[in-house]
Image (cartoon, rainbow, N blue to C red):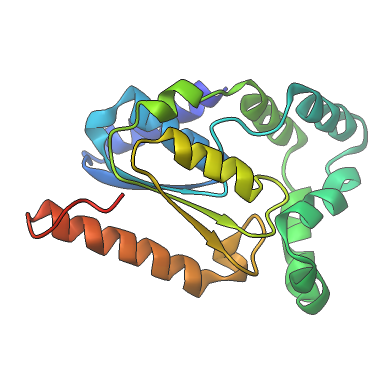
Length: 205
């Protein structure tokens, strides 16, 4: 469950004796980050939520994906998944890389993949997002087919003072398609909040 994933990350942070962390989560990782912040706000100083949402998809969508993969394997869904993950330009011009990501996808254990689908299906962080009290940056690729810009903008609207940014020329994984642009946004966000934390300015949400 999503609660299990949240508990695992909290356990890791506690084991490492780490607090005051900036959590950066992509997709399901962004949901986990919201959950950690909700359960243990004392551990989190800021959030970077990339291509994620307070809710993602519908029960019907996830149940259909689970059924298809359970009966035919991940390969039967690899093409539509990759179409949602990557822009057409990436798929056409970086074919070798695309096949590498396809291989990564289809090699996942079916039980683990469908379990993650079920965890996303059952997760709803709508209320938790509204209660987030740390600076938050919400980022999305302009061509994200899994968590479209409208969804990520809705998430940003739920979080008090959150900053919302769209990265052009990217799908669900800007870290792959536009790493420089994503890094610049994150660096700017972290730098501004570090300055504010030293009392040299106001918090940039």
